[in-house]
Image 1 (spheres, helix red, strand yellow):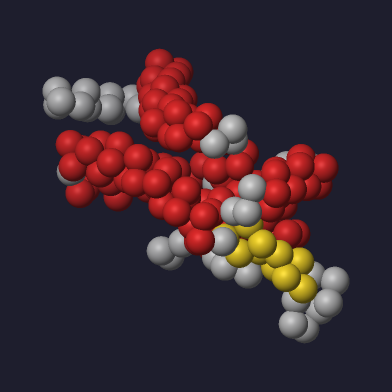
Image 2 (image 1 turned 90 degrees about the vertical axis):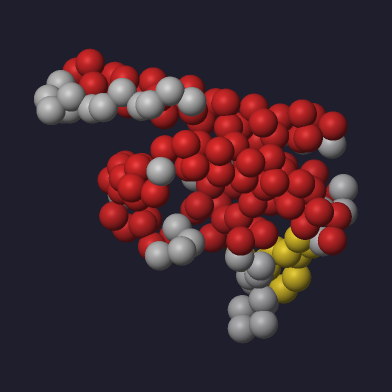
Length: 159
């Protein structure tokens, strides 16, 4: 991979901002395309993957917590979770303290699919991280955190 083009000292000008937006867009599009075939093979889409990913990261996540993380409508999440449950990938149980809560967990089949998809993402991210170097990875994380509302930054694992 060619050495990255250094940012201009005038990095807040429109051309630099547009370049960053385009790099973010095309980088994310390429990253997610790496899992599209695996999802399509299962008859699933990216919304299903996002649900699987966050349930894997936090077993016993409540439906309302997942709803807040994904920022989608209750109806959309209901459809996604229903399809995953019908396929035996997600199971729900009632909360211990609050019987109204629905706690989400991956089944062994759901965990296997999530791990397969993560492996494809890990390969892409590892290659990009290795090529950019440790300092660039920290800078990349700082920029992405800067794009998030401060109230949501603690939601990111590894903090």
